[in-house]
Image (cartoon, rainbow, N blue to C red; front, side, top):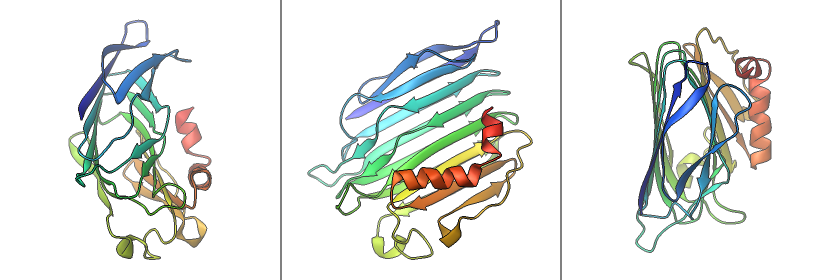
Length: 247
């Protein structure tokens, strides 16, 4: 299956953020919800199973100058194998204009046994754009082996590289090292970027997570046995500074 979705949000003269382009098809279905502030709010609804091996899915976001978008997903994404062992491909691209804000909160991606996922996130930020992007990866369903994945982040600010990183979850003999994931089943991350941001350097005990400080940005990661503990780890690492940004 091939499916793509696109969303464009622009600032209106009255200060509201208005969705000007909304295009989607299953399993990527976009639905607008009532906003609690001037920014636009949209849900990404999983309207079909998967992705399955062989699927190619893409989501493109554009937030124009001075606009704000909050995107949420409504359910976990279960990546499953097909009969031929093909990889599923999920690509997310975002452009955030001058003075614009993009906040993305995705429900977990679960790597079912036997699957192979190639995921890429590509973000272009204006010099004074604000970004908060959360995602979580779960290694297998309960009491089953984990699937495989290669996850790439490519983020640029004002045309210059801000973050380039690849997480390779192909061979448990490698990533189960105590120096990497160890026995953790969940990897939760949040990427934050904002003008003047100076996040503190923090590390969770036992190497369970850390704040990786970047120029006016931070990549925060937490490892845990389950999603609840992973969320708690992120909350501990971001306490006192991320809430100020969101507020």
